[in-house]
Image (cartoon, rainbow, N blue to C red; front, side, top):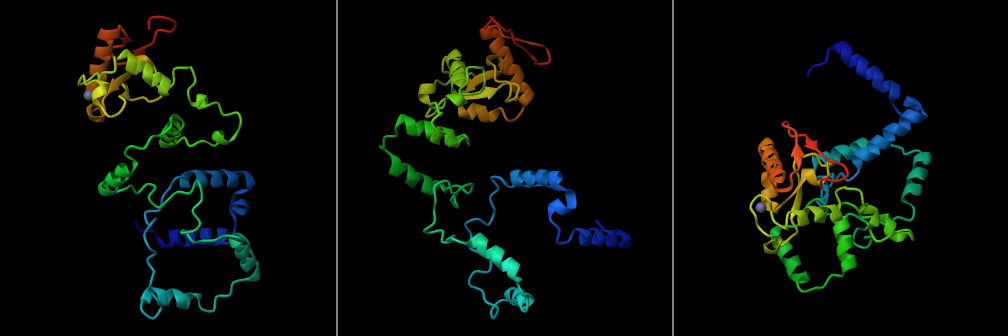
Length: 266
Ligand SMILES: [Zn+2]
C-alpha cells in the first residue's frame, strides 16, 4: 500500500499529537480503562515465539556485531532523567531475575505451549509408570488440563469441584457420563467399546454447537472417529441425528434443528 504525501503528513501530525501522552490523556479515563482491559485480555496466554530461545544478541559485542554497534551509538549520550531512573528502580526493587533460582508456583515454564518431543514424552512416561496418583490429584490434573486451574482451592468455600458440575444439563463430567452410559460405552460410529480404549469416550456435539449440551445433540465417539468429524460436517450431523432418532426416538427438524422435549420424553 502506498500513501500519498498528504496522507503521510497527516499520519505524522497525528503521531506527534499523541507523542508522550498516556492513554488517559488521549482518550479520557473511561475509554483508556477499556483499552487497557482489551490489551490485557489480548495478551493473556500469549507466548512469545522466542520463549526459551537465547536472545539474538547473546554473546555479541559492539566490536563484533554491526547491529550492537549501532544500538550502542544510538544510546551514547542518552541521558536518563532521574524521574525515570527512580521509576525503574522501584519496578526492579526486590526482584531477582535468575530463572534458575526464581521459579515460583504458578509460573509458566518455557515448555508451556512448546511441547515435549516424542522421545522426551516416552521418558517422562517411563518415570511415572507404576506411580499411584490419588483421586484428588487426578481431579486437579483434569481441571488444570481443561484450563480451569482454580483459585477456589485455596478458600474455604470450595466444595470439591461442585462449582464445575451443576445439575443443569451443561457440558461437565456428569453430563458426559450420562451420554456415555446412554450409548452403552460404545463409540457410536465404529462400535468400539470403552474398555478397549485407553481413555474415556469423547462426547461430540452433533451440530457442532458446543453450547448445545443436551443429550439430543451429543454422542459418544472414540478419539479417532471424533477427529474424522472435523470434515464433511453436514454428512456427520445427518448420520448421527438419524442414528439417535432410531435408537432413542429423538426428534429433529428436516434442516437438522433439534426438537427438545422438555419434561419427559427422555
Ligand atoms: Zn470410533
